[in-house]
Image (cartoon, rainbow, N blue to C red):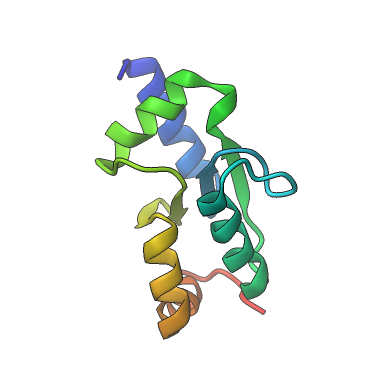
Length: 109
């Protein structure tokens, strides 16, 4: 990953309290895992920003190195990497995701 790509990803993570790197957009997810991640955040009533990795190959590959996580989507809350859709689902079902968001000062429904 180039320094430019790393800086771009870091700036996005720093600028957005809840950020989802995903394939597609929240209105038109381009894979089932991204769709599930969006559904979880929407069900929690969380305001979030997203980055469509399909629009930028440098970000698509760079985010994997940035987080040391091999798959997309990836969720960041207040600069902290949370995980992908499977981890999000586990945390959602156990109540941990809503708890984490609340602890970080993010409004949940």
